Image (cartoon, rainbow, N blue to C red):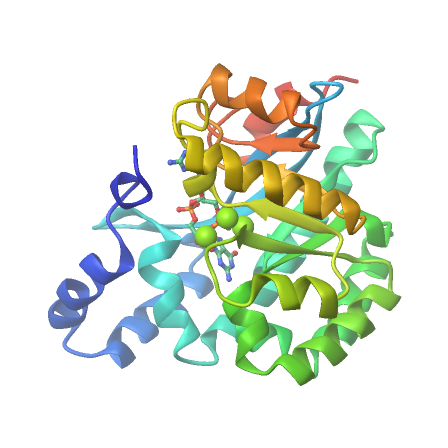
Amino acid sequence: QSKQQVGPSAEFYLPTMRSQCSQTLTMAARLRHALDKNELRLYYQPHIDLQTSQVVGAEALLRWHHPEWGVLSPNVFIPIAEETDLILDIGEWVLRTSCLQVKRWQQTCGRPLQMLVNLSPRQLIQPALPPMLHEILSGNALEPNSLVLELTESTLMQDPDLALKVMHQIKATGIRLSIDDFGTGYSSLSYLQRFPLDILKIDRGFIHEINRQPTNAAITTAIIQMGHKLGLSLIGEGVETLAERKFLLDHQCDGIQGYLISPPLPAAELLKYFPE
Ligand code: C2E
Ligand code: MG
Ligand code: MG
Ligand code: MG
């Protein structure tokens, strides 16, 4: 299953949905309505520590439960939200909801679980972000190292100087930073040197059939070695088979996330992965 086959892409959907709604503004208005009417939901995908095989945290992933269109993928509506300031409101809701959720899980099972949250470019450079993060953490009495913010290489590229400044502010609070889909963007190596990072998530395109694709194996092995030498943790994304899991374990990857462990699930269904 290639990256393209995973689901309909934003490129595929957007023109259709745009013509249905005639313009992005209309679509954005529906999305604003969705946020107000609780049609946006967070699903959570657990990831495990490969050494212990224990679930150590989860990534918050948005879904839009549309009354007529069914469950929409974030690849369809996040790009629309990102064209307007709506992404700031949605992003704030995601942060608040996911931080409250991880605190509840921690209280239920008495373990230091972590929450990984995707951050859009506009959110990162929003001046209100660092104080908001502080307020959310203290409001929930949540340890800062329970929260990991996922950034993409393209997010860092938009305004690297500003991104760097904000990242240092965020890091100073104890929140950790991760690069998502690592290896698919540009300037990966210089960014590793420049930005204060904690985790690299290896894109699932490199994990796919890793035991049968020598190029994927070579790239993934190199990313793990390099990441470790830079003091970073590595999470393999999109792990679907036992062979992929074994390869990553054998090559000292720290953690994995993927359908092999679990698809993204509603919060209540994740409890079974958190033994007391
Ligand atoms: P991502 O952050 O790279 O998330 C991983 C995506 O891979 C998720 O797609 C997940 O469901 C999917 N996935 C996980 N394991 C497997 C697997 O084993 N095989 C395959 N084929 N796929 C797997 P999803 O949930 O559709 O999210 C797509 C993207 O939307 C995310 O990619 C992220 O970039 C964005 N996104 C999701 N939620 C948010 C959010 O709250 N805020 C922002 N800004 N972006 C979000
Ligand atoms: Mg992510
Ligand atoms: Mg990813
Ligand atoms: Mg992605």
